[in-house]
Image (cartoon, rainbow, N blue to C red; front, side, top):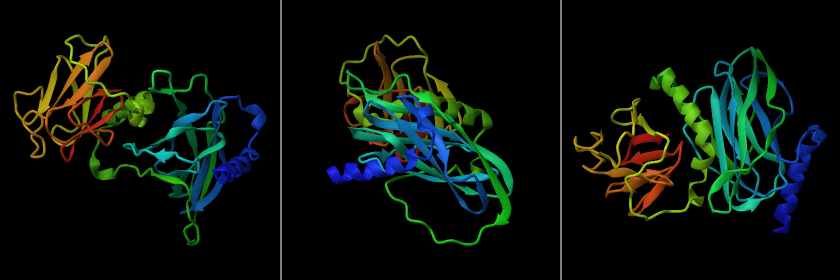
Amino acid sequence: MKSIYAVTFAIVLSFAIAVNVSAQTTESIWLTASTTSYKTGETVTVALNANSATPIQGFTFQIRYDPACLRPVNASSLIPGMNGLPLPQLTGQVDGTYASTTPQTVNGLLAEVRFITLGGCQTGLSLESAALAIRNEAGFAAPLPAVTLGERNIVLNIDKEVAAAQSAQPISGSILPLDPPATDQGIPVWAIGLLATLLVVGIVFSAFKFLRARSASTPKTSAPSRSAALHIKHGPQAGKSIVINKLPFLIGRDPINDICLNDSHVISQHAKIFATDNGYYLMNLGGETFINGRAVKKSSAILKPGDVVRLGKSALFVFG
């Protein structure tokens, strides 16, 4: 165990000396790059760094890029126990999320993020948002308060000259794919903007699903004060946003449901959404139901903004 801490400290220290540490606050996140000039086809590697006096159990970041100049590849973190949690990606923005079951101390490198240069242009990367996550007294995942964003922008100069072929460099740590969506999916611009807003607002809570308490309480008819909606991303009715205007809210293949999904892998009454004074919950009624990749069995599970719900094999929607 001591040897692991020693290796981690050495990696963190090597990145810490490359930035102006005196400019960072006690709790802060910032971007750095070892170089800013590239040829076409080369790999751009930027470092996401953080200082925190409080041990964390995860982090999240959103980096804006120009898809005409750059293509995201992946991110990797050498922090022991940090695992990447894949989320749907948007063209022009990478959304990275890592989580750990045990608190980890960070003082330097959080993750390395890689892009491939696509052609001659002057462009840049912008850290749109970032957060450090902890487990609060109630046992829920929550963002660490008062975290300052330091250096957020990196300017890149990409020459149109194509770089010579180079052997792939090995990547260490927990690797998180950041592949952008295929260009032939035809996702409407309004849907992309809506999903981006939902991911930014609810990314921390959706990332740390395994830290949430499960509830088996009896559904109540009272609903939270805020309204909610389901944004269907894949399967029947893809592209639609449906407001939850009554409770309980039934989902299934039968037309009598509030949402009818004509999918052979969705049963007649597949799941229902209900609410208590504490928020919204999803209950599985017998089909295959998943929240952020985790199966919902006989009990109910809390729904948070940005949660990705899958019914059957391919029916996919985002709660928000």
